[in-house]
Length: 277
Length: 362
Image: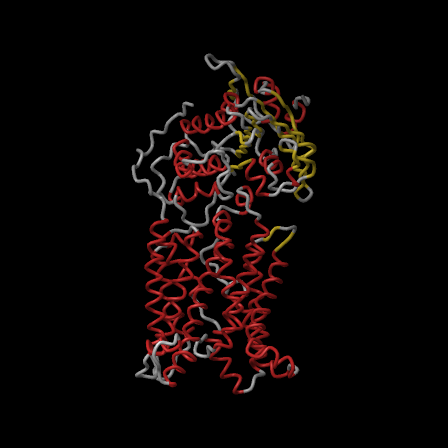
């Protein structure tokens, strides 16, 4: 269980997050959605301990501010939005960095093959010898995902769930690999781990996320299942455009389509804002 | 579990694809052998001819005898010089590697952030102003005065730099680089002022020292600076994993379990100590810290666990070779070794850049 209470972040005079409460359960995939600048990435950075924020974040009962980075590294892994690599590592060398704290798994054998398994999982078998700096953006993002997966290879260790934090994991990917990556996250949760993902694609979110937190202007505008949160009024108000949710077969979940090309002016957004749920 | 499999790239059978460990270890064996050869050559190389080097080496171990002249030249002149060259070369290359990893920039160098300038200031102050110290202190420090002052100078400038660049527990690399340039200019100016006030004899010392030279190496100097260098060389591999993780950025290194602030403090201290000690005994020997790690990265990649030991060995080889050249080109006189490394290293470095401009974008 991840519980963040009253998370507040201020950059200069601008309050980026205003007393945000956020919870996520192990065994589920929780998505954070919202328009640009709503504070999604900042929230992820606050609950992973990357930035100092007001409020408290507890990971399975432990205050993360009081945990060492070494302890945190065995409990959770974080995939950042952009991954600049300073030196020309090969793909294999970079994936192995997931083991900076050593092998934190219960397995005693076959550990040499784990980096290869992680690469196979993100569809990059055979890329081991390529230089990371020569890969495309999407390939690089998947290499980073393989590194992150390797860090917490087993979703449950010593009866404790481990956590996967993903910041826009599919933003650079083609539609096929978007599904690959979402499936990996989904499986990780199915096996007992916890997944928290910042997402832009509402339809992928509706397909894969168990729960959604909708942010706008640094505040929580909705919490619940995709079906509960993704209502026409809610989404249209937050994103400032007319969105219509449908329920197409065979998927059965909400499916969001834009209804007009125009973006609402700000004063309409304010009056159309849905109440907190 | 059924994963959607990628249509990309067929599975390659080569188990070691992407693993440059074997290459790095093979290279290390070759470098060790080359180092042994260069060390022996260095002992046999010099103005005096007809020296029975093997005899002198064996005599020390109690096997056979050698003339007093041979013993003195091999053991009191060439041996400390060879050991100094090897240690300083190793330390410069390792410091360069650590600094580049720390700054996440292959062009970073202790010379760049004012560590060398600070150490140089300490050494110059000790040479020129050392005579004004109370006799008791002069006697107590002896040959250790210059290394000590250089270390203190390098360490102090690094500390000031670190304080300037660190805010709220976060060290900004950009601030550190820029502040380093400013600080380097400042200490350079103060050093210049002291040099301006120096006597003619001191000026000659300073000039040669400033260009870098291992000619003045003695066991006494080595005893003062050597332990510091050895300590930093031994501690460097402990930074290897953290330096690798740091290549992905500080936040990612933190997420991977590295205590980034602690690691940065350790790296800075180790670089300051080792550069300070090097500057003290040999003055400014440039380009070793940039060219050696660069070359090795081209061959074996950037993994620091494999890179640091090889950098130490190749650094030692490079400085010993440069020293042999400096003893030969204007024989029987000697060229300061700093000139040799600059003449060889400068064009070489430019060649690397021109050949692979992409390095600049790393």
